[in-house]
Length: 117
Image (cartoon, rainbow, N blue to C red; front, top):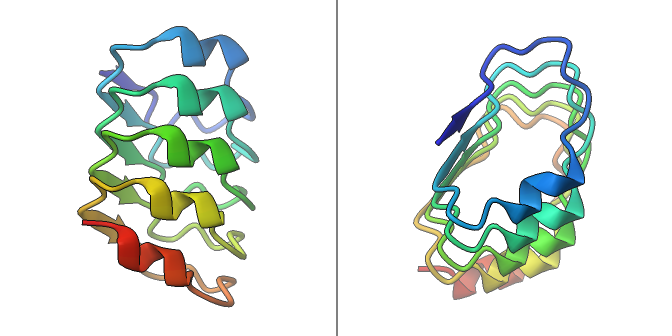
């Protein structure tokens, strides 16, 4: 578990985060300056829970997030700058909970999400 919640000045995560193969939970809630996630996050194959709630500057998710086969919970509530989801997210067969509440800039949902659990 890596808890970086309320690190309000955190603008980016290091690519080396992808080397944390056993990372189970990543909490970035209220990281209001976070604008993007590294593509290498897709290498965290044990990632079960990703909390990005209220990351208000986050405009996109990396397509590589679809490689997180164990991803069960993805919380994007109040990610008000998020305009779309990568199609690859549909590859997360274990995805059980996807919270998109108050993502006011989100313009469409993916048909690929129907492939999720």
